Amino acid sequence: MLKYQYHSPLGTMTMLASDKALHGLWFNGQKYFGAGFALDEIVTAQNSITKHTAAWLDQYFAKQAPDPREIPLVLETTPYRQRILNTLLTIPIGSTITYQELAQQAAPHQKIAPGAARAVGGAVAHNPILILIPCHRVIGSDGQLTGYAGGTARKLALLRLEGIVFAQKH
Image (tube, rainbow, N blue to C red; front, side, top):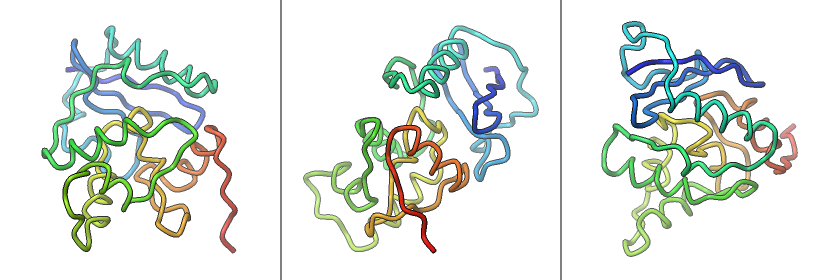
């Protein structure tokens, strides 16, 4: 495993990658940064995965809509959270989804229990691969902007980059 720093227009990000896949992508200083990995003990270097991810991010921030499935990902989390995060990969650029809709799409043949949106919120908040797994596209059931581990200002900036306009709350 190695880590690499990417300098995005919204702040420095840390990637965590093996030779085969991306394991993490976080804004430095965000909530849940590092997802429990001992990043201080991991060497800083580049490999084909970090180079490909950096090129993907360059395209994304240039509004070129790259496909996140181009980057091999490893999700080291619970099966439930993996299902939620994999469902997020199906939400196209320029679209949003509510927590309740995400719960329904992740388990289409199950009755959605009361409080499912809260469990989905926990999975979304702990997303270890920001932007590629677009948790910033999840909004509240009232259509309003909700929290984001990278900060709501970044979430708003990412949505605007994708052409989604939100009215500011007063």
